Amino acid sequence: MKIDKLPDFAKKFKTKGFDVRKKDNQYYLYKITSKRVPDKKNPILISEYIGKIDEKEGLIKKERSLNSNDIITYVEYGLSHYIYKEYKRILTRSLYNIKGEFANNTVTLGIVKYLYNSINEVTLKSSYISYFNWSELLAFYNNPSVQKRVGNLANKIDKELKIKFESFYDEVIIGLKNMIAVIGDNANKIYDTLPINIKNIFEKCGVTFE
Image (cartoon, rainbow, N blue to C red; front, side, top):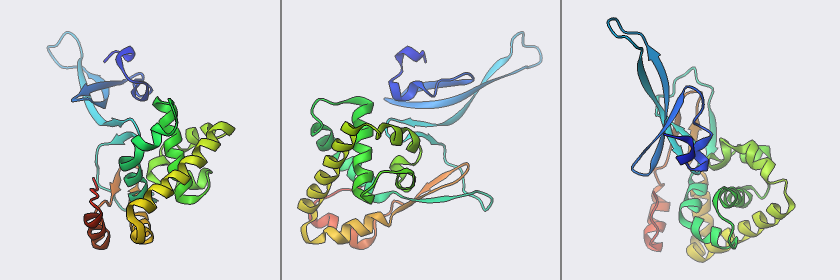
């Protein structure tokens, strides 16, 4: 796919030897190599599927099994995932006409700020939502105007969750924070099954988790 037809979040993956393709409004990364075949005048092209390109999470590599030789990292997944899916639109609107990558980065930082009350390398590497582009987010956060917006978003997240879950607030926050992702050298695994107590609270509050 021509680079000028790609959205900004996918352009950086279209490099030498790789192609980005679109299917059903999703973008996918392929490694392109060539191979000589007897009786063929020209080499044939071979496409190897690498993974899906997500606007928020970047490149999500195709699933492979984690093995004992992998160096693995455990990161928070459940709470940040829920906040992003459930409140992204509300949080973006509160930024007043800020859109695109700037808005996405600000929302992500607001979520991390809410989770850990601080933005630094350690906290950004502690959540799946920010793990893969932590250095970009940290540089983005250096802007004082961004820091103010991030702080406002963290406060708004806290307010929205307390309204939604009321007396269940602490139980929900702890339960979702305990849902993790395991990041390995060649594969990632997400443990996204809701604990039974959180599932029951969600049903009472009319919340879906995907």
